[in-house]
Image (cartoon, helix red, strand yellow):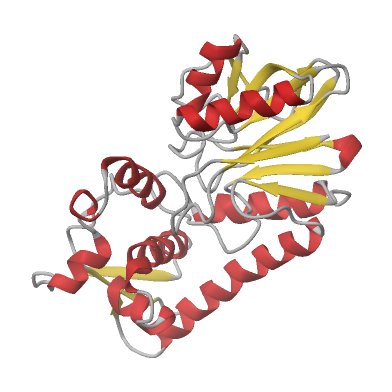
Length: 306
């Protein structure tokens, strides 16, 4: 049985909060997937849920290392003694690496571990065959779309991950994402995500076709509009991921714009997170947006002749 405990960390990026999952092996052992942010009250809620159902937490597994998914692993390990498992590429402290494309075994549980690069390069997805359930972290959410932001994420690996989920795990029924509600029709949701990325890339190419050159801030306003300026930086990083892929394929070229950025352009490309958010929220947004990659030079993009 799968039980979920939602962390009290709502935000535009985490929706109603981060989902932590407790899987019962039927013999009193439990696996926690994504224990969440370093909030003592959330760790206590996970422990209380396990105790209420007679479950001993015997393992902790991470889909990826972002600050809204992984830091509570250390707290929960300290409380329970359960080992922590993470992707071999993870920088999170752990007891053992996940065996990619192998199994994670805890008690009577055996979950397939799927290497799932794209949102990050330390991302894993877990498939529980008896329940036909995928635990997708931030690769697929219960609602909305996922931020793919260089340098920690990349668009083409992400699209390949989605296609792999559709092709190799076509029997999956339920998706338990890192945020949002469970998804009852896994195949429809995966198809929706694949189509969304293809649609966004078509919009980007169409936008570039409207003029000789365009900067990322111009593309953000052209494609997304000006209705939600608080999301412009996330939109900009999404477009950057698409543009990098298209550049690598020789379909788009970039040229440096020889002028200073306007205040709006600078805010879209490098928002002053420490001035806008508290320390915890700023760290989360910086991780999601790949803010360690500063975009201090303005480039204009154009389609290359076919």
